[in-house]
Amino acid sequence: MTTTRLCLIRHGETAWNSEQRLQGHTDIPLNVKGERQARQMAQALKDAEVTFDALYTSDLKRAADTANAVVELFAVKAQVDSSLRERHFGALQGLSISEAPALRPDLWQAHITRDLDHELEGGESIQQLATRVQQILDWIQEQHAGKTVVIVSHGGTIDMMFRIASNQALNTERVASVPNASFNWITYQQDSGWSVEQWGDTRHLEGPALENVDL
Image (cartoon, rainbow, N blue to C red; front, side):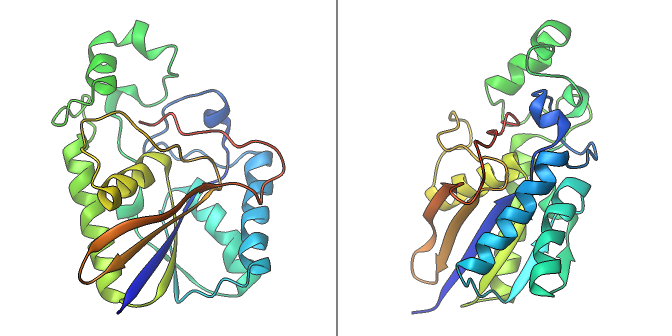
């Protein structure tokens, strides 16, 4: 039976992560800790002798720079795809989770209640994100059927991949955290589709990693 394995890696920590700000499409770089986490992540792949057939990354700097740690250690090329970006949070981007309820209570309410069709004033709805993520997952699986692929992306995007792989409804509360620089594995089999293999592994990191606030 052909099994496709995807290793989903969230980017390393950024200053906005530490401030609990919604980043979305805002192109925030890794902070010093995030750069260190990226190197630790790449070394863990090497130490575990993980062999993979392709490396994909979001085009946003925090993800691309995290992927670059793998590029340098494994001497491979990363394929950049904007479909792996974080959800666009519209007018909430740049606000912290403490500022948003006071400054934009209407949008914050739509956000936390997971209104599936709300675009948060110029952003992307949850339903639109789900469609985008489903399409890129299906495309990667078709291109690399039976192979192992490493994907560097974002907390909200990887959470959506978890929902797809576990059949979790889009309007339900998050049940799986996605820490910075964590390893998260999903698999695809022709007869059964996607499933979650392993989640939220940060044993390779020195010290705790922040969870995603981009719900």
